[in-house]
Length: 37
Length: 210
Image 1 (tube, rainbow over the protein chains, first blue to last red):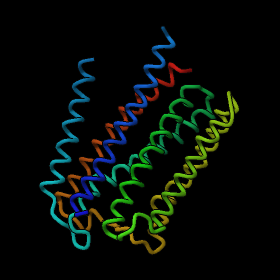
Image 2 (cartoon, chains in turn orange, purple):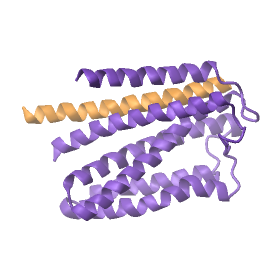
Image 3 (tube, chains in turn cyan, green):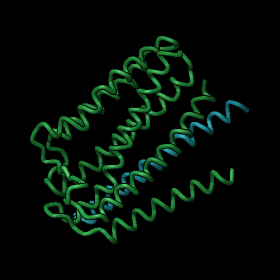
């Protein structure tokens, strides 16, 4: 793996991580909506 | 509502600009080469983890003083985000280690200290899961307050008082140029905005849940 690919991979991990965390929050919100209905 | 959307769009554009800037304007650094660009993304995750643990400890202390539920919710939300950013810092750090030291994990003092930090805060969530009600809130607050005492030691002191492979780039002393400093500070600012956004979202969910 080249040095620039390393930096790119680190970047991807961070943004995929944040995206997955947002998906988790979204699922929690949807469950809350279901319960409130 | 509109103001909120504009703010989020600005954070998005800011982060995009930081990414483009870091891949186009930054030059290789002595001993680290192109890999040095990783500091623009790796350092802010570690910084946000420390900030989140600090906010968590602050709200834990406030909960112990006032017994207001809102402080416990804020402490939980911030500790969770701190743990999450700590995992991101560990993963990005180990990718850096693979390129520079040819191994994902070397049990270097910096790696060991972040591993211990993950164990300490992992235990916080185990503690919350094992108890309930007022007892859970009080125990978790005491634990989070005590756990934070280890953060400055593990994040800032241990790697500096022992020999470490981890580069200790001194931003103000000529190790890197002004472009690196600007990119890093811009990135820290962008990540702080993302932390604030996620924190507010997490707190609002907890408020509805309780």
